[in-house]
Length: 238
Image (cartoon, rainbow, N blue to C red; front, top):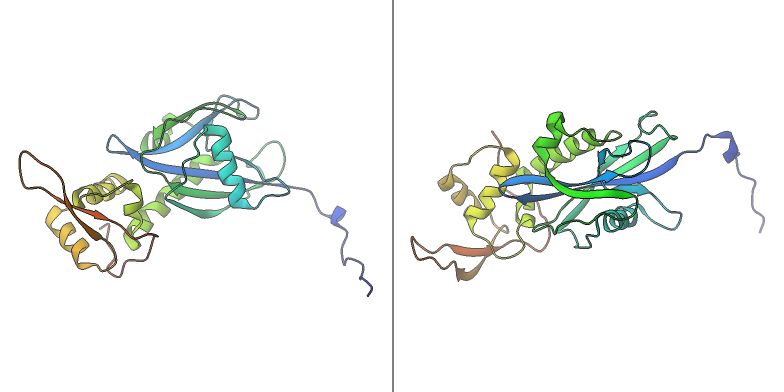
């Protein structure tokens, strides 16, 4: 069997690199926060950025995202949720060369304190609204990526059971409601939310346990589905 000659010469096309960047969301002190690293290399040395790096020849995109997260932050906790956000390929997004980044976003409850590694000088978990306000400029187009990931998160809460992935164990309905309030930035009516949750099949499973309380009525504890699934009765932001 003979092989045909390639129909094109790869050298006729300009080279470019592929990278991944990952947005890791968590809730701390009743605020939505994201994991960031301080760069220790040019370009943008000392600027804050999302964890990420170049794809190795033997890796797929998700492997790169997970590896860079572990290398740059020393966090090896498996995300409760991880999904691809999109591709970012503006010609001038990286001053070194043409780099296309495939961004991911994840949810990790009770995120451990990060420890800088790899080519990161420092790592921290910072409030998303502080970062997007411009008080903490990000390298490259990472502010755009973070903003897009935030909107993806808000939309996913509206349409899926994603809110339960912010919980590391059994939770109260009020804990679930607080996830929505933190991410959406507004208060929800407790009674309406509880009715919505209880009337939506496949969202919560009652553990049969309650919180211990010296004052007030003990609250029932629930768990969510084993994977993120669509809601048949979406929760609306407006």
